[in-house]
Image (tube, rainbow, N blue to C red; front, side, top):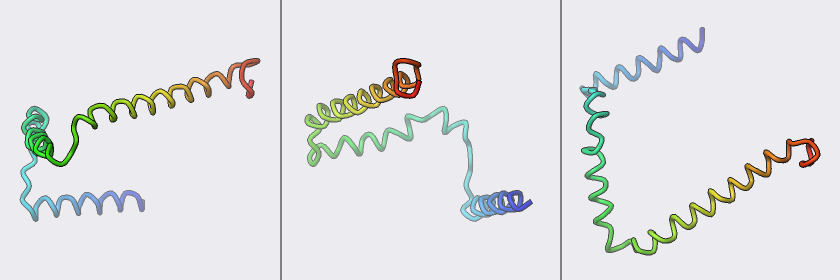
Length: 91
């Protein structure tokens, strides 16, 4: 009963905001034309080339992320093997 009241309160708040700011929600256009929303951000990021060393980031971001993903994969496999009888410590 309390949860239903809180959900109704949140719904009323969102509807009041939509009416207050006169939003026009058209999700079909937003889903079909994602590139139009991303293009200004991509252009703004590319303009930061003066302050950000993109060559260095292009090397180090994939290197660090691959090491991180590799270490998580090793940890995941180690935890899986720990549940196998006579192989891991928990079997």
